[in-house]
Amino acid sequence: MSISSKAEPRSAHDLEVVRLRRPWRLVSGAVIAILVAKFVDILITNDRFQWDVVWHYLTFGQIMQGLARTIVLTACAMLIGILGGILLATMRLSVNPLVSWVAGAYIWFFRGTPVLVQLIFWFNLSALFPAISLGIPFGPQFVEFDANQVITVYVAALLGLGLNEAAYMAEIVRSGINSVDRGQLEASQALGMGRFLTFRRVVMPQAMRVIVPPTGNQVIGMLKTTSLVSVIALPDLLYSAQLIYNRNFNPIPLLIVASLWYLLLTSILSVAQYYIERHYNRGHHGTTGRSRPQEPQRPRDGQASRGHGLGTGNAAEAGNAEG
Image (cartoon, rainbow, N blue to C red; front, side):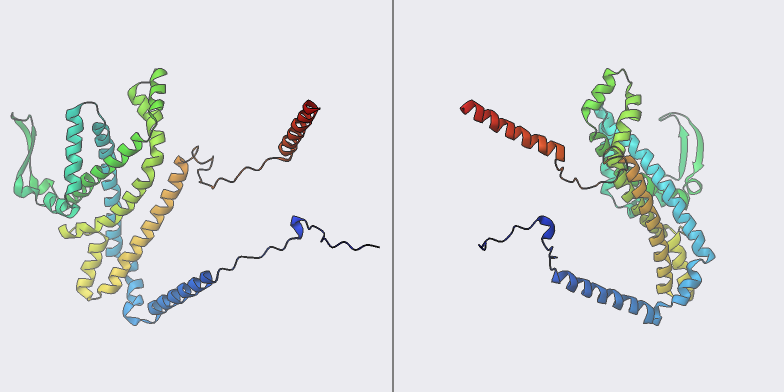
C-alpha cells in the first residue's frame, strides 16, 4: 500500500472565484448619497423656495406664451443657421479663391464678436440705415421701407441669433465634409455622377455622422442663448418670468419656473439627438448604430482541433523526415 504525496489537479470549474474588494467605491457612494440627501432636504425644508408659487406660475398664461416664443425662436434661428452654414461651408471649400475668402471673412467676423453685441446692433440698425431699399446697386431703387418698421424686435432677434449660428454651423459642416474619404468622390466621378448628385447621395450621408453630434449641442445651446433676447425686450421665457417677478417681487420662484422649463426642453432635445445619432451611425457601428466594445474572438473548437491537428501533423512529418 502506497500513499501519493501529490494533490490531485483541480479543474477550472472547481476554483472559487473571489470578488475583488473595492472599499473606496463604498466610501464614495456613501458620501454622494449623503450629499444628495442633504440637497433634497434643503429643497424640501427651505420655505424660501416657495414651491407653492412655483407650481402656481409653472403653467401660467404669460409663462406659456414666453415658452412658445422661445421654442419658435430656437427653431427659426437654427433653420437660418443650418441653411446658412451649409451655404458658407460650400463656399469655403470652393476652388474659387474669392468665394472662399468671402465665406472665411463672414465666419471670422461673426465668430469674433459676441452674440449679445450682434443682437443690440441689429435692434438699432435703423440708427445706421433709416431706410432700407431694394434696387440696382449704384442705380435706381425700386422699393424703399422704413427700417423701424422692417427691423422689429422679432426680426432683430432672428438676424442676431441666426446669422451668428450660421458661422458656427459652417465650420461644423465643413469638418463633416472633410471627414469623407476622397476616394469616395473619385469613385463617384468614375461612375459618372455629377457634383451635386455626389454631394447629395455620397458626401452628405457620410458627413452627417460627424455633423449631427455638434449640431445637437448647438441646438441645445441655442435654446439657452435665446434668453439673451431679453436685452431687446422680446418676451421669451426668461423675459416673461422677469416681467412677473418685477410685479410680485418673487424672483427665486419665477427663476425656478424658467429653469424647470429649460431643463425639460433640453432633456427632450437630448433624447432626440440620441436617436438621430444612432440613425446616422448605422453601418458604422453595426446595424443598430450602437457602439459596442469589441470582444476578443476565441477560436472555435473545430479550428482549435484543426490547429492542434496541424501542429501534430507537422510534428509527425518532422519526425518522419528525421527518421
